[in-house]
Length: 164
Image 1 (cartoon, rainbow, N blue to C red):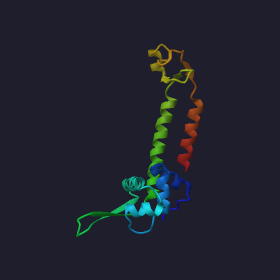
Image 2 (cartoon, rainbow, N blue to C red):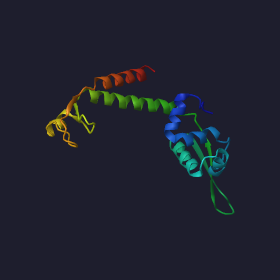
Image 3 (tube, rainbow, N blue to C red):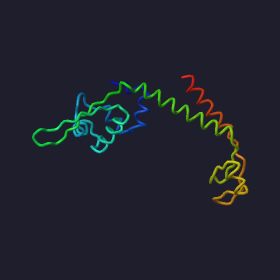
């Protein structure tokens, strides 16, 4: 089973399935069980259990076995969790995050911004010239926005992820 006390794994799973989904994962019974059994044993609402199971299934963390009752013809879905691939999934997420941060950093470094002092908008220089440096929302004069602190924070985050 996965170490749910690891803050990275816990944070990742929480971002996927939310707090109720995380509770379901923590209290999930061993072996192949139905969604109704999971709901009964974990105290999580059946709709939340089903939503969580499908999210986990889409991310390859849940395995489902479909059985057909020979008498009634009803299908029964048996679920169990499999987190053997979570480290690989976390690495993919890290690479995707790093790629997005680098793209955002490049955008922030290569553009000049103007903002409304009332907080309505942040516009690129070209967009600000089109509005004659007036806020399109409230009509206030736009002012230059120094994004160097934000660029610094992005660089720090990129460096931290690159070295980890």
